[in-house]
Image (cartoon, rainbow over all chains, first blue to last red; front, side, top):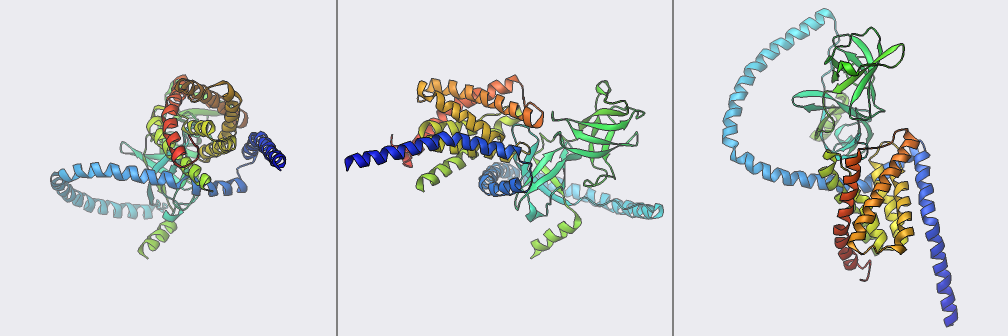
Length: 296
Length: 163
């Protein structure tokens, strides 16, 4: 009896040992399988499942940190409220005058646009979002705290503001109910049709994986103006026209990649690494949907 | 089941600590291997099955936020744990000094293997510079004894270990 028990125990431990021998191999094969698989449906579904395990706690911690940040700030704000109130009242009256002038200018602009039969520029509508996580190894993707619930869809353009300058940040590559993943413009796989404001030529602005960008496929005759502004082009399928991407970098670094095209370094207008808040552009139909749901 | 829940909570805590360290150190281009540190703690205190599983899912957690090479960290973490278990008989992982040295070295190996994998699968060797490489590894090494101390208390309280 005792011998049998001992025998069974030994058998069990032998089985456990063999499982342990297989386990690292099993995980390695599984990981390799995941790497080699193209990022298509099965992987995306798996990621969607993982997002329910990996993201909620980060969202909660981020919210808690923000709340605690807000407490200390609001004390200071309350202390300065009266002074700020006077200043704001003054500013409001100034803005009222400016607004009245703007209305006149807008009407004039519309009238002139109609006269020139130009297509009316689409207003940028969207949602402000906060970065809740930065991918640390490549620093080229971020997770924001807004998702489909806020009208964000796949491939929504993302812009940001740095020192009063509005510029391109990236685009949405994955979206869930409450969060979205943004690939930043500095990623080597990020490319967008760009328009050089002074040279009036189109090229392809791409990330260079070192936090910067470059414009390629420019004709060799393109005048290389340093600090020339580069905007999103009207021919871009995803991005609305006229978003500032950046400016042409130092002319010393200009390089000719092939016999046929010129490549210029591009300094992004907004450094995606420094921004904490982003503005995700949403098409007007989505914005209406979100507003209606909010009213309900 | 209770064991699984306790380890799951430990995993959640690991992701939160990882987030905090990313928030603090990533602006300085320093990547502290918090998930690796937690994996080594589990490997040092619990069974190999839990160690490998924790490391694999810890790696997947890091891969989840990446847009390329999904499964890369999971593979590297599994390899690192394999190395750890191979040398665990010859080292005293309870000693603070060896904890720091082993974690620092394993963190360096992790960065190099991941960079190599990135070179193979994406054509770009991931390198944040020698300062980032050394400081990240050293901080991971210094972090482990502190977290090890706290984790051990949690393991005893939750009944995961006896001592």
